[in-house]
Length: 526
Image (cartoon, rainbow, N blue to C red):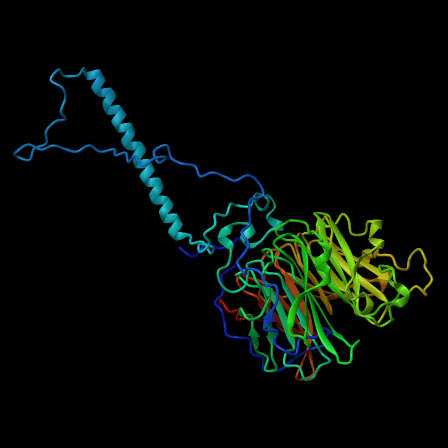
């Protein structure tokens, strides 16, 4: 009998060699990667995977009435033989018992025999099924109860949260968060893409693509954090800090910890360490569910955003970040951060008090587009009807506010929204807007960004796959996307998501047209 698989899994794929491209891949996104190896990690907690506890009551094991103590009950009596080897009848008292009493004893013995036989059959079946359905998490010594919430809401769960048998014991965590960062301005870098993921041990790790197109890292030496919750979403923001005497590459990585709080880890290539970020002191408690959305977006330029109080002292070209995390099952909360004097301070967004981030499906992801050459930024979320909503905000306070084009207010543009996504889909945007559809396929759409006039461009969509079928992801898989330049001067779309629970698979295609290529990354088991 084959190994027991998650209902979302197609087949567990063999690990393949590291990805090697015949071309070099250069990121066009202004998202940098460290130029030195962050081998030292501070404040790392246990790397052991988190045990999912029951959302309801603990269930006691049901015992057979005959197995609650050490007594062994036999349904068979010994047979006595005479000197010739002939069987002797059962011994009775000299005063022979009445026939009716003998019949009662026979029925009683027959009943005991049948009951014991049924118990033996049950034990045999149990052993056989246990051997035939080996659990991926059989190495765990902790008893894990089925998650009642996930049994009732499987569309909001994946991996081990559905059943402890689906925990992966090699490669990536089943339900791993995935985030990618690239860089384009540093021609001396030896890393063109950096991928962050959750290892099957529970630790958050990173691996990178080198100049030859191959992938390296992902070992126990490349650990970012060891206290992440199971299947935590991961988001990364990277930028070049030019405020000092030398340019410094900075990565901010966000995730949800086992204690339920949103965490920030910061890497600078001038110190080559990972440190806790300023967000941690806010103790932002995330909605407690197996699969939720979390997104941090790089904010390329400051245009007078009223999310912060000290607006007059922030230069126009100051980079920053916006962060969305789930407060409950239907509400996100937004926070903002800016470099410079605000480098140690996060502030809660003020205009969300109008209710823009309520009545959402926080099991779904959050997407954003905030690095364009205008002063308008966009955010995408999933509503409670499994449809995508697109919101925009123009922060140019020198522009006249109108009813159709308000300034510094998040506004929903219905022309860019669409229905039919998977309830816990991830959302991602680079050149195309990626979502997971109801059937598990990953679909990309070209969006014409024009504030209140934004629309999905007709006949400019695709589904990741080949001519025969789409290449389905695990239902609810985390996903990350980017676009890169090739050595020949072309441009490719790149997407990462899970297809079998222990993998992270790279999908690539020319931005204009052509066939998709898929290659699972080689993730160390140690």
